[in-house]
Amino acid sequence: MSDDLRSQLLKTGLVDEKQVRKAKTQKHKAQKGNQKKKKDRQAPEPGVAETRKAEQAERSRQKNREQQERAERRARHAQIRELVSKHLAPIPTGDAALDYHFQQAGQIRHIPVTADLQTRLIDGRAAIAGLEIRPEKGFRVIPRDIADRIRERDPEWPLVIPAEDDTGGSEPDPDDPYKDYVVPDDLMW
Image (cartoon, rainbow, N blue to C red; front, side):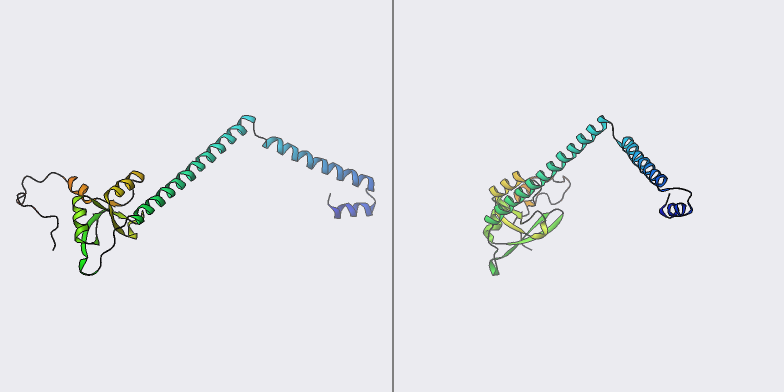
């Protein structure tokens, strides 16, 4: 009964105070009993709870592994950035600067080099490395042994080793009319 109805029934004398308290306690007991029944219905079986805990533990382990891999990858990239920055060849300016063109990820890029660096790049004693994993940050010339160490740590790092690119070419076309003519590596246009 609502409080309003209860008070009206008391005023008219149809019920007394004792009956109102009894109705109130019965209502409270009924609500409490319904709550227990709902809890009993919602209680999972013991096997279901264990599988749920096992799935949750597996998800936690997977997430921890992924976080650990990301941390290791960041550490490797930091080591590579440090290697590149320590062994950079200086950028030439003025008359000493020659443009060295190379291909990286399907794009033709260029970097200023000296005549000595150009010779070392052609001979395979030097390589071109990206300053970051993203090639937009720029490229610099580094020694070949440093490039090999970078490739060991992360094969995805942007590296260009011109001597490898030349030897990895395909077979020359037997019908090529210019096959007998040698094109020099240091050809300047």
